[in-house]
Length: 129
Image 1: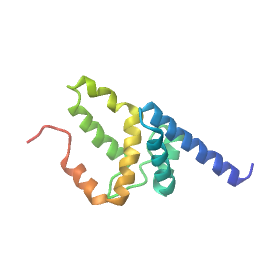
Image 2: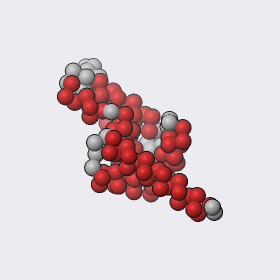
Image 3: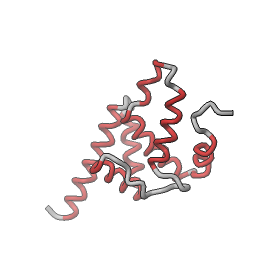
Image 4: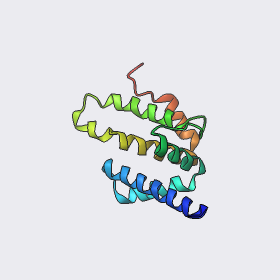
């Protein structure tokens, strides 16, 4: 197998991974396709996804506005804590959903970094006045 075939095989495995996570998260096929296309076009996110696929953790090399995927995930989990008193909402925040949402948020941050950076600075998910 030549390098091109290896690359195509690796990209297909990552595409299937994203689509499978979308199904596990209860998302639509269209969402999985859109997210995959965005990740595929982003060199930084594609590298992060490949690393996560191989290692089960974020590489945290790629940043947008000083934030990594791990920072986004922590920010999302902080918001999750606000839902803990609402049992009907609990299933919205399963691991596949949080993982996909981290990648989706980073894609959106690539287009509008300051808007998300401000939210992450101001919205801690805690009821602190």
